[in-house]
Image 1 (cartoon, one colour):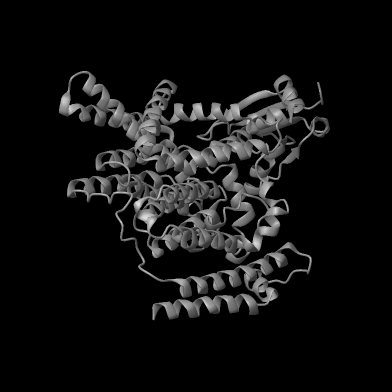
Image 2 (cartoon, helix red, strand yellow):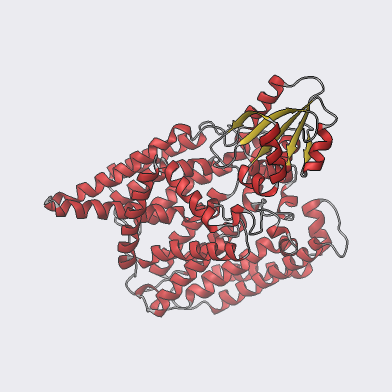
Length: 561
């Protein structure tokens, strides 16, 4: 009976794809019609084709399904042992603490990328959001949920960020589930504790972007992958496909994780691991093919816009820009270690401990190492090859695997030292102490985590406190967007020295404001040279975004002086 229902539903999906007029779909989503040459019209045709493909493929799966739904052979991955009551209470307490840290001060200090999403996508309806892709700042699933949150709770910063915070909390719960499949209960709780007090995890959980949703679905799909490789159940593979597709609907870097997951699956098939040996290609047909079909379907409407230029319309390309330099990315990683572990020295020590965990898990559980290394290497290689910005946040989705490896490395390092000094059976307590030390050192970085991400409010207040009648305020390049499009200040914006000097010649005093100094120094060197020479520095207003300072200066009129 269930098979009959699924078959009927699959046929209905295919018929809808065949019969639904593209114009009706567009009108339903956007309340308007478009011209025959519009990319959205092509996207609607792709959407229809995707429905047909899903319907036909679903029908084929239902008809072809035979035999047991799960493997009868021994599992390749051990079933996690149940946690004791005390351990469950510790986990619940950590999750509650994580919620407090991520919901507290959720409305503080919005930053540039959040403003881009808010200005460009929050005025749109849900149908418009899923059918619009002007640039990669539209993290589609997050944008939809943020729009619904704003509709429910009102247009405020905390409502805008609420989906990111909830996904951040959820990702910690899923991290525990994943780590339990590779680590002991004790190590899993330490992994949860470290993530709970992680500066960077809290920061991204209070960032109105899709990165915590991407982390959540990366971890969830990995849990489902491991479970599918253990039992080879059709239903688990289908849930894996759904989780992976939702991750891709949030951010396309999910593709790197999916490639790693496919590599793990192929490794299990090639080695004839017990969980998949009885029906080795079930995962391909019930997991990875549906993942591809669902991902295509969720993006079908915007595929023409994406490949027409929208995909590269965010980020700053070009090898002359420091943000696309791998060395700059390494420096950012070093800065991140300094923030995350309270000092660079401690951060570098953590790197050594991480290497121990990587080595030991590589021998015992190579799947978790592959899930970390493969997407990270692929991401760096691809973005470097096209000169795309190498912001470390693009690799935030790998954080969960990194935490698992780090905690395991700390436990192994401490235990080994304990044995060397003769602690015997109590050596593992030294390993636990090493894990606890990493958690405590990470917690020391939290004193500034709830400060503004960028201090636009402080910069505006400083200008307005000293501004005199006749003064002109000028923003440089990308600084024009936050002050004018988000804060609606109506200030002049310049991109060349000639434009700036023309304004200075007509004003008694000129205020100059720029942000993102790394970008400004590379893109507007002549303007910044004049700023350093002629302007009195009013302030450098820093937030928790590294490199996101807002610089304000004021000078008398007179061009080059």
